[in-house]
Image 1: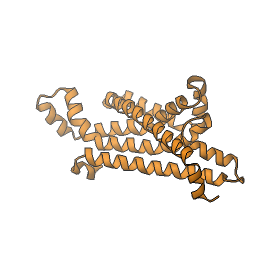
Image 2: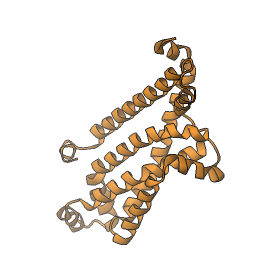
Image 3: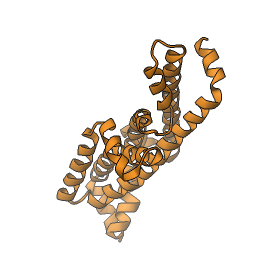
Image 4: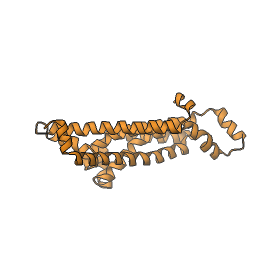
Length: 217
């Protein structure tokens, strides 16, 4: 059968796998955003803590995905647990780095103006620094999301959810009937998901970032 017929005949399986892929990526990026932005808020003014955090998250990113997923099996088991932990870990560096860069990049004059209005250090952070840093932070979340959507396919190696199962199934049967269709369906599905997530973040950016800040970031 051709590719269109294959997709039609496996639509229920493919749509379920795509939904799982979306859910895994969404859960991981939400957790990573909370942890990453929180870490950035805590360490951005302390050079030693800031450098240690960035070095630690950068080190995680250098670990091959297959190796990390395999190492997690004794701790979090097969399936969703290892998948979410690995995806969250890989998503942290761009978010933390952009949060730190965005917060520290706010014009000191603007910060001093906030303090001159009687704002506490915490209020200046939340009311002045964070809103001005938000475009760059959102970019970090966006980059992390695109990255982990692709990495999520590797999670099929540890019985993880998503379209990676289709890709692995096709690659393991190359030369047999529908092997190429299975691989292509999984790959194109991931591309579509990545595009949809990017459109979502573009919409969030348009709704949450003032027009003047969009040009600068």
